[in-house]
Length: 308
Image 1 (tube, rainbow, N blue to C red):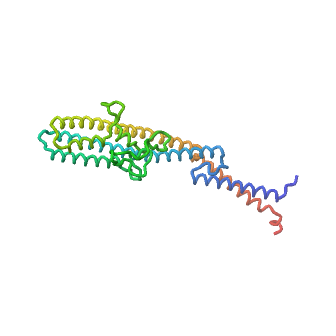
Image 2: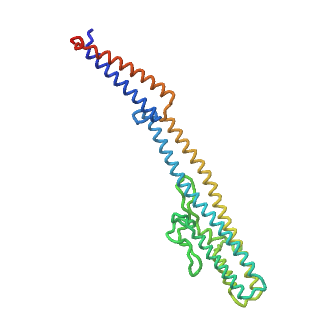
């Protein structure tokens, strides 16, 4: 059988090109540290890596939402703590106003102090989180959620809670209506009392002149009792926000593990085994050198070299 020089030449060129392409691919993988650079390199591994990347992106997105929830609940917990301290001051002021030696003028001064504390408490209830959202705005409010009205403070926001998109229940707000306006009244089961109405009522009673000692005593006793009820109610809401913060910590741990698992799955699918890759690169380089030498020999196997 006769083998033409052209066939040998073409075979050598093809072999050289294949070796060069394999060497280039090995070098590219070493440079990037990735075994799968394109979907065509390994379709199954590329699909697995893509799913893992999507899972990692979801975990990162949920982590951002979780951070927002934590910030909101920390603000709520702090605000409820401030409210509790104000209620303690309210209680102390009411106790002081029960002094039998107080004149009507002195009780009116005490009432004015109560109204100042009441206004400060309303400001706390309308506190914002720095992004324009109200901490006690329930499911949303474009303006102050708690407003003064002729009959007392009213709630203008939508009742309920906003939830962060974390995949698990994590609040972005607190229902200010339930926290400040609807404390269950154990004295009258089935009814609720407002922290602002309690302060308003005591202040109004203290401003009333010419009361008998018995009337003053009843005002102080009833006022302290109701202040204790709403104070305990605010404390329970503060405890609830604390539990939410604990739940957020637990969710964060799970999200961190989900992200780590996704990163590991992606790494297993597309990352390069460096030792094997270096060995493969050296093998490809040796093969390429051999192909170059073969090509140089074949190049001289033409009739023109002998015609010279």
